[in-house]
Amino acid sequence: MSSSDFKEKAETEEQLRHSDMIDTADRVDVRQGEDGDERDALNRLKSYATATSVTSATATNRLPEQKPWYKQPNPLRWSKVPAVPKERTVSPEHKAGFFSSLVFQWIAPLMSTGYRRPLQQNDIYIVNPDRAVDPLTDKMRDAFKRRVADGNKYPLFWAVHETFFREFWLGGFCALMSAILQVMSPFTLRYLIQFATDAYIASTQGLPPPHIGAGVGLVLGVTAMQVLQSLSTNHFIYRGMLVGGMVRGSLISLIYEKSMVISGRAKAGGVELPDTPAARAVEKDDKEKTKKGPEKPGESPDGIGWGNGRIVSTKRPERKSYLLLTLSRSI
Image (cartoon, rainbow, N blue to C red; front, side, top):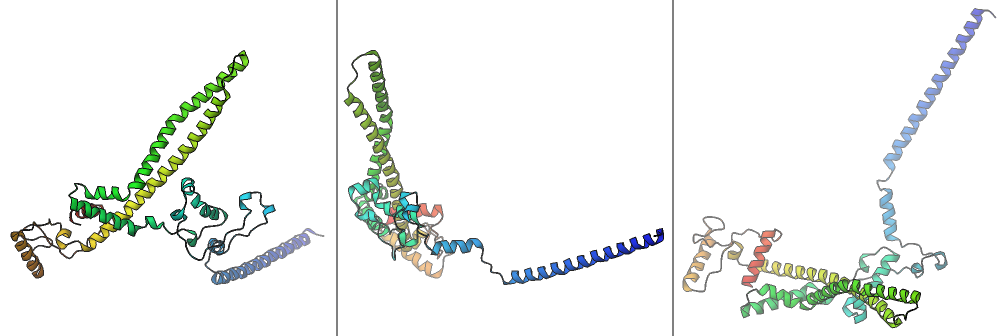
């Protein structure tokens, strides 16, 4: 084969190889275009629901699958998963006994249910009727009016104290007991360590050992002090948060009621006029001028003020302080 024939054969093979590469690239482009069209069609048809929302909805509506007890190493999960109640029930604390209230046993069913499955709305207890807002508000209102009639200097303060006397001082007593036990526990532990030291020295040197009853008493004493300190601390925190929430709810209810019946003069920042003929004449003149329309909104010619039709907001801090002051003066 001559060099020219070899050259022509090489050029022919190169052209064939080039044409094969072009055909392969065209086929790849066509396939990619078809895949892209299919992906676009799927994107148009697919749901906008995410995997998280589908999973959460399924987990919320369906209870977890219960395994046999012998396949669960945790004995707390051996019992059946409790069903969701059809309606909410009153808090068991309302009728709980002394021991149940002491160790918070009344809330154990709710905690056990929450350990086995997610809690639902019907699992949450209704508030204790003794701690509802309506009876506490009525009790505080009656106490406040009685102390205002008696001429007490701080009627609102003493009304709150009278309404929540038991819960407040019970929490304070628990705080005192917790502090005392926290201080005394290290001293008792020190005597226990000294007893153990004396017993070791007596055994090594052949001396008479201390009486075993002293050591047992110290051990029982340290244990009892730690248990009582824990109970006192937990009851102090519980009672403190409970009193704070009840006082806040009762005061908000009283302030809201007062804001609905407060006079226009008080809303505008005016002061109460004395019960004299001159004051009654000024008040009558104010009413007549109010019907005609004041010269300056929110201010009368005598500088006392009257209602201007504006809605008083009770959300601002200064408005809350003002309504509390008005409540203590004019209920």
